[in-house]
Amino acid sequence: MKSDLFATEHLAQQPAAPGMTLQNAKSVKYVVNGEMHARQGAMIAFRGNLQFERKGQGVGGMLKRAITGEGLPLMAVRGQGEAWFAHEAANCFIVEIEQGDALTINGRNVLCFDPTLSYEIKMVKGAGMTGGGLFNSLFTGYGKLAVICEGNPIVIPVSTQQPVYVDTDAVVGWSAQLETTLHRSQSVGSMIRGGSGEAVQLMLRGEGFVIVRPSEATPAQNGAH
Image (cartoon, one colour):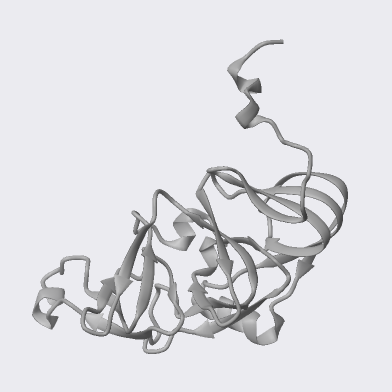
């Protein structure tokens, strides 16, 4: 049988070292030798002896997710084998986190990660009760994290002298050491008259970066939860 479908770049290769690699721009391959973590429902194929178990966030984590619509429903993948992960054909990126790093990622943008990484749902300081991610996922420790993004992400440097303002529905993540606060760019009078649709943004200040996606779709529209 002949077809471009069977080209080398589309074929699953034999496993090499344990851990994650990009299968292609839209999916991640993970060679499991023990345990790893992934978002529930993200596994698209596997081979080998693997078990999938729902991983709870704890009472506090579930409460936060119920209040805000944010959070990250996880599963643990255990055993020996290979698994492939994807989510709605979103673009996939692998971030290597080193000791001392701290990265804040919106739960809707997390695909899978190494068990050596610590994960915690944290309140976004200064964000108040808003719909763009009152609680985000804080990753520390060391290991690899697979992040998904609808479209091609934009990484914007942030400095103390030049803060960055981002739409709360478009933000993917940022350097955890950045200072965050809400910024109102629209006058009260303008809001009463109907507004511009850009009333409140998340302001980030300090030294680091922020990642945004080219979309303002809400998590509910993305079916992420």
